[in-house]
Length: 615
Image (tube, rainbow, N blue to C red; front, side):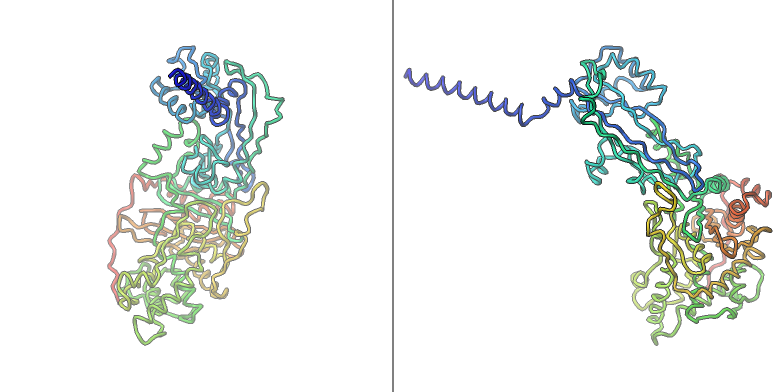
């Protein structure tokens, strides 16, 4: 019995000893929290954020710079409140309840690792808070930079940066970003994030029990320097951009101007826009929330994402296709039969050139009928499908029905329906020209973006080719764009057929529907469009280029709910042509006419439309 007690006692001591050994093993080998906490008492790991690359316009003018801000970091385990908490919170602009919520979130992340407590303090707020930090050991300041926009323009093109989300960290990898880091959210900032952001560095500093820095750990032997991001040279012309935004004030729509010979975007306007400085600093969240709920949707990039029927500007593509495929020639005449489809202008008939000049709807109704009814099959419906597929194949080469490849995220493709789409809607062998005739004048199921419109203008300016639109001329140095932006894309239309189109576009500006874009100092070419809008007044559209020979600017303008293309989009384009080519405003009265009109407060009223008659 006595021996049994000894064995039991020895067993108890053995079990207790094993428990202590296991616990010691866990503390020293498995659980690193104690080691980390001990290290935090003496060594602090401080992230050094790199300067993000700046962005300049094509002439070296500053578009995006950096400005210093300060993040308040906390290590919850070390935090001691030795001062007046209410005074401390007041300086931060929060209350004690918010303080506790922030501290709880930081503790949930880690009690021994630094966590972001309050972000992007200004110089003034930092100076006030710094004096109280000694009373709150566990807090420390981390300097970093945020964006600053000296000119407050091109918000939708430049984009903005913001704190990275957990979902994004999982997507791009924890080695590249961590919680609290900033990342490009939209625009150039997002597309060129890798080039702009640089590489984080780290330094290890010795701190005392109060959290005060006492020098580098081992003289910086383990420190790594941050690497600044690369500067970006944008293709945007600041003066043209500012003037385009001025003209589009109090209007909804877009302006996209491109240098045809390179594809470089000269101006990129989505209206209404916003001051990009609103999305910087500690008021980012409040301002972002206001912009998101703004009924005018200033964050919506209309130039890249809005999709409209092209209207009469599409007649240029149908005309070129018909010429290339011997469906018509430049001498072909059709009567302006308003009994078929409504038209505008005073002309009884038109040849190819004057059909562009006066934007004759019956002419292109007839052209499209010939395109779709070519007799490639004895079956009327099969013939329509065969001809439609061939036509669509050529239209795709104009950059429609797909992305242009512009260096911005979230580009929309527009809509260029396939024959399968019509098969699903109407049934196989149950649709033909009379079903889809509206495509002949750029209406119906078609839709394209303003960027695509400007790209079509470049094709017409270049007489048959284009380079993918892009907003950046170089990374780190000029003329160092990606190879994809120097690749020439051709339409397959013979150059000589563009001559007739361009001559017609010259007449549009000289004495046709686009006469308000006319200049005495250069020859401009263009095509107006009045896009039907089931929700209100028509949209005013214009595409064009200048000068006629060796053009240096191509443009697309869309003004929503404003009426005829001749009334608004054309004169805006003319003013921008003059601004870019002559660096002056040629017609003050036209500028005043544009600036006075407010289509946001007073949208144009829909005009009665004649019903399209099927023939």
